[in-house]
Every structure is written in structure tokens, then in C-alpha cells.
Length: 383
Image 1 (cartoon, rainbow, N blue to C red):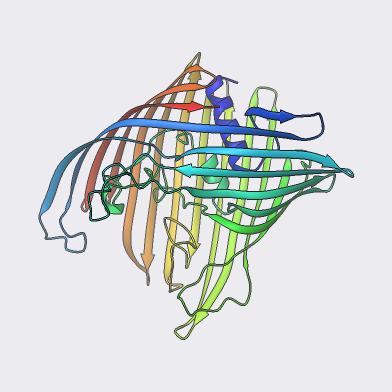
Image 2: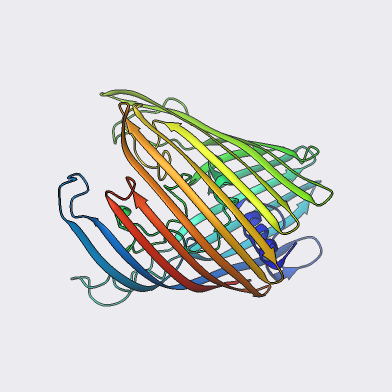
């Protein structure tokens, strides 16, 4: 396993609430410990964009512009703190992480005056209870639906697409990775989630989560339910990870009731430095970008997408080819097709520093609405 793959797995473990973190130990008395971990990434990007002045009018003129920026990539920068202790046969843990962007430095030209406007986004703040029977997570963490789709993305530590269709070229937050072009984003949610112990490679997670509302006055008789079953194993020199996840909830107001459901899954195989990764999803009454956190008022909204990737690692290098596609239909009529093709090179300098070069080609509605080319070079620092 190369250093970059180790870094990917370490980051995935952090986001997936694993009890094992690569971090800097602040305190450890043999029973209780406190540690911290950190990620900083920064990219120089150059984008060339052609899009319709009015995306709803196919006869409107095409608008072209080039934009250079110094910004973060797909992942926000964050610092996290981990707490662990053992008492009465139970392992008690907790994690808090605070996420920030660098992309706010040109957003302060207003009556509010000078100074940046970095917001602290608390995406994780939870406690865990572990025993022989598994784990219970209590608090705020990423959702289960689409979780592994995003964590197995070969470009997780990269830059990703910055289509102007979603306002990403000048966006004050992150680039999008493959969100909206292959998977939806599992927004952090208040939850109570149970995970089984490792059962010969299998693990099941079931979560009861705070539901989303279709309107300010809507009512939700039941919580949102999300789940995932995964299988991870290694056969001689062949590594395998497969997973299936889902979500369901309903919300009703005076306009009626909307049932929202989604199913996702994927598989990743790696051998002799090569890795193939494929994932997909299909939803009804959910958003194509942010799942239930994007308010959908009709079950007639249907989305489906897939992500196909291949990578090769040798020495300190890792090369990745990626293609993702998402289609959205409303009342049986296709209203959006969004795809992103990418090539990336990762060079591992050491366990704490990775250099990245990346190209993304994004098209909306097969390029008839927008074509966007983005080049990015940058560095990722982790502790």
C-alpha cells in the first residue's frame, strides 16, 4: 500500500468515525487520550468557461470568461479533536471537527467593510460508545446515504469541478469534487447511529436522523432513516470494498405529502497498483446535489448518476482517470444532464505532504448550456 493510499484511508477513517486516527497525541495516560488532526489544502486554478447567458433560454447568447484563483479544493480545511477513554468494559470516544474555507477573501467588498468572512462549519460533533456488540454514535456526523460513494472517490484529496452552473467559479466555499456529477453530498446531520462489529468483512450501519422539511410549516411524523451495508476484504493481493446504502423519509404540508427515497452503491477493486472504482445512485424526491438537504417539493423529481474511475500507483506517484454523470427528470422530462471528466496526478512527498495536478472538463446538458475547463495545481498537508 503506497503512502497516498494510506493517506486516503486515514482521511476516510476520520470522516467515517473510525476509532483509529492518524493524529498528533496531546495527552495519553494509558487509559484516556486526546489527539488532534488537521488538513490544509490550497490550489492555484485557471478556468475557461463558456455558458448561456440564460440557462433557461437555449437561444440566449454564449458568455465566455477566464478566471484565475487561489482557493481550496474539494475538502475544506479543518482541525479535529479526538477523545478516547475506557470504563466498565466500554470504550467511550468523541470527535469535534471545525471546517473552514480559503475562498472568502474577495467576498468582503460590501457595506460590511473590510476583513474576511470565514465561517466555521462544525461538521462533526459526536460521541461514540463501543463494545463487543458494536458502536453507537450520538451527535452530528455525515449521513449514511452516499457516504461511501464520496469516501471512495479517487479524487477526494483533489480539486474537482467548478461549473458556473452552480456558481462555483466565484464560489466562496469549496469546489464540488464529483457532487452533482456522480453522487449527492451526505450533509452532516443530527443522528443516532448503530454500527455492528466487523462480521468477517461485513458491517451494517443503521441511523435515525433529524428529518428535512419540504416547507417551513411542514410536519414530519417520523424521522429520516438511513442505512448502509458494506463488505471489505483482501484476497491474496486483491483488495475489495463493496457497499449498498439507502435513505427514506416523508414530509407533508398543506400541498400534500412528499415521500423521499434513495438507493446507492458501489465497488472498488485494487491489485498490483491498479484500482477500479464504480459507484451509482438513484433517488426520488431528493436533490441531485445535496440529497434531502436540498428541499424537494414533489416526488416527480427523479435523479440518477454514476461515477467510474481508474487509478495506477507506482512509487510516489498516483494517476487517476475519472468520469461522472448525473441526470435529473421532473414529471418524466429530463431537465438536467451534468457530467465531469477528470485527470489527476498525485505526488507523495512524505506522509504529511502531497502535491496535486488536476484537469476537469465539465459539461451541462451535453455542453449546450455550459462547457468549463479547469486546471488546478496545489498541495495537501495533513497531520
